[in-house]
Amino acid sequence: MRSIAGDRAQFPGACTGIVSKATVKGRRSPHQYVLTVKGGLCNRLRSLTSAQFLCARRGATLCLIWNARPECPAEFKSLFEVPAGIVLGDPGTSANTTYWDLGLGWATPEYYRRVFLPELAPQEMLARVRPYVQGLRPVRGIRDRIEDHAKHWPAGIVGVHVRRTDHSRPTAQGRKFTRDIPSNAALLRRLNALPPERSFFVAADNPDSMRLLEDAYPGRVYSHPKRWLHAWRQTGVADAVVDLYCLARTSRIVGTFYSSFSEYAALLGSLPIEYVDAEGEMPCG
Image 1 (cartoon, rainbow, N blue to C red):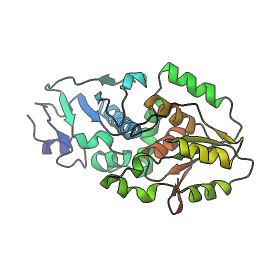
Image 2: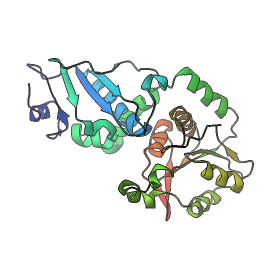
Image 3: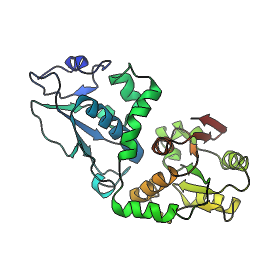
Image 4: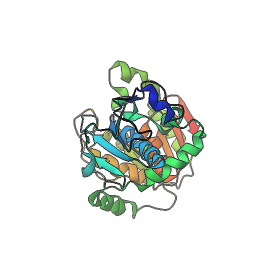
């Protein structure tokens, strides 16, 4: 078994602890990498697509372990078609297999860049990952729902993403994110600054935010019908995929600060994004 530190020769900038359980014997370039994604939907997707780029660069196969968990209670194949170059499941240890550390399971493209490809500029890394983000296809049933909804939109519709549920949970982690939740006043103030004829596609993780915006902008708010759940995350994962891809079809995004969902939608649609937090606007992108 090769040492973890030995993999630094394969990945410039890789640090001890990033690659674990390496089982490569006598090969400088193992041809299978095993990634276990974790966290919510877009935490998983941003790590997956970053790993796709890295594996394609190495001429390697990516073995994806996507376990349904409370924060993302759906299997990968129920949401997306399996892309070329990806095998689902654990292939088991072999001389040609490297298991990536679980810390990569929700890593950003920037984290992959700093660890494996520090010679790339941050924006270049995003440009390299974007084709894999845009190449990931939802399954047919979800694609049909996206198409059926987006075809009714007016031109120039603005995407709005409001995340409140798990960022406001009464836990140590939830308290960390308190200031990231856009207040109603801050959100309405930003949307009121847009031209008065603008319409909005709203992706919200709770019914209260939907009602707030529907009342504030009657006849100008679009959202796809969804079933609200009495759970930690109040929307189902398939509904979240529809919201994500609909957001990516808007003209720009007003998102929730520190949300991978807002960030990933902007990357998917190559869209400008600005964030609104509890204190006001935080322009970005």
